[in-house]
Length: 73
Image 1 (cartoon, rainbow, N blue to C red):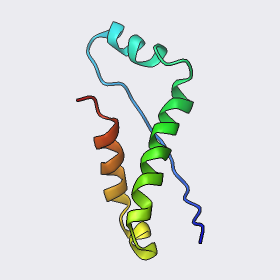
Image 2: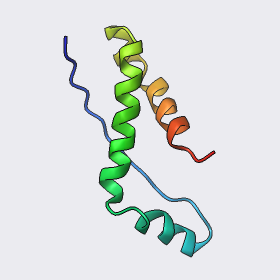
Image 3: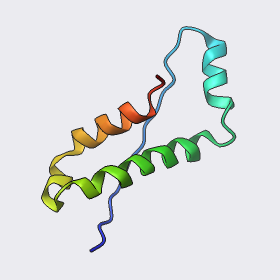
Image 4: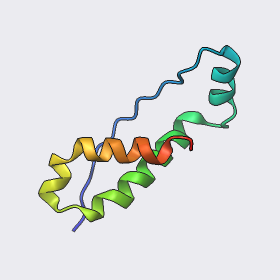
């Protein structure tokens, strides 16, 4: 069975340092595509762990999984 999932990615760089903001955004060659790719990778790895009904109910779980896996350590 295949499931199509629509994902909306919203991102913002939070920093008081303007140089850090530029570095965070411009260091990537294509920030939008790379951030979206990271998010899709997490979604693809987490969704198979869920039952079909849980997938629709666990949006917050998926959002946290994305946040945790893409946050700097």
